[in-house]
Length: 503
Ligand code: NDP
Ligand code: HEM
Image 1 (tube, helix red, strand yellow):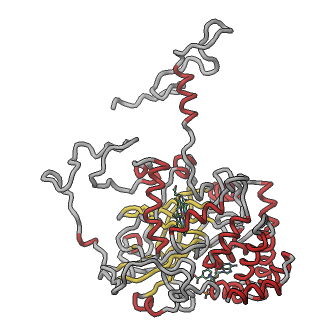
Image 2: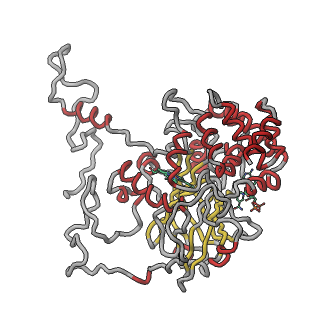
Image 3: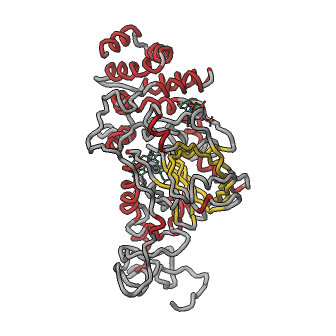
């Protein structure tokens, strides 16, 4: 490459200096324009290609760079290098998002919030792609596209449809725990700084003796949990659609850097065999009393990206991206996500998406992947492009091998989702949340929000859907069910009779 020539003149992408940027060359002052004015073509053609596919979910989001600092030694659980010394700092990029809305939708919609963090570690990038809730609506990846369709627009009306949402949720009782949290004021957090983040899935940690434990990750906001009420969220929607983006951007601009404390819960492989719930079921939490939180470190966000599209829109987080010492678990949802995200990135950003600066790992990688659209990193030059070969010194390192999993003598089959065996209790954990954790005010607001959300159910199946969902609420907590039924003007005795008939 020749030496970079710096000037302040407007130029085309190929470097030609513009002589005119207001008018197109034409035949006489009133005449038609000339095809040869290439600058017009370049401007129009590039503009026409400015949009890339938005994320199929989590399209509206905000991101920032920052630092993760280790505050407590967890090396007895993991050999991951980012955790190997108290005080150690690792660069991070975090992106927060709503889930169901389009890229231009409002930040204060009732929805879970995405909480994705990319750690640029010396062993490669580790992506913890979580939400602001510790659980999820479904427990099998086969249901994800069905579920998300209910959160998007109705194929006929092209409008959001509470009928689709509650129809699906009422037919999928495992969603109840997540729906309860969504209906609480945590469904409308006051911006991204005031919410917790949860890795949600069970993952594993592996130490330097190659011993494995199961783990859950929790980011607790140092700003304190703060939520909007339903009315406040609706009001903010009409006042400032971009409330959360503005709040995060301005806090960082003002040097008011938001922080989160990373904590883990640890379960041994033996404990996992004994607990009375499936520890790999994404609709369940691990009770804190049995699996207390252990401090790990602090994440601080301290730098806004210079360019939103470059760093936030093109960011690609994938649960598949793990590092030595942190690994997967048998959680079916996690297993499905390992496949889904890189596939989505190749569609949304192209095969070489990992070369985009925000996605690039901190060191040059060695592999035999070559070519493809927009390969701009030198394409590994003249190095061999096949393995094994007699020319380079690239090796496989068996010391990075994970311990094998003991799968017992199970045979492959489809899980019976109606079976009472295997953790199909959909009611105990939401009941504990509603009765034991929520304050009276939170309980009242959750009931009010639920009545408001269920009031949107309409159409010929309205009564059927409402009654089915009410049965789930009653099974969780009779008072909750009765108050929601009353708010919807439904006869409680009829629901009770329907429930008794179903059992
Ligand atoms: P704990 O009392 O030890 O934990 C309750 C947890 O609930 C706290 O982490 C708290 O988070 C969170 N919480 C408080 N208010 C709400 C709310 N309105 N919506 C959602 N979460 C809230 O009890 P257990 O660990 O035994 O869990 C009891 C129930 O709490 C569970 O069934 C689950 O529904 C819910 N929960 C449990 C979590 C876990 O990992 N064990 C995590 C989050 C919720 P914070 O301290 O940040 O306010
Ligand atoms: C984004 C699929 C469950 C959190 C996405 C994207 C896809 C996807 C395709 C868009 C990726 C992109 O274009 O960059 C799935 C599937 C799931 C699932 C198939 C279940 C099988 C979950 C769960 C969580 C989660 C359980 C949280 C615990 C996120 C987040 C993003 C995202 C935070 C946005 C990441 C970003 O900021 O770029 N998901 N998802 N997803 N998902 Fe999921």
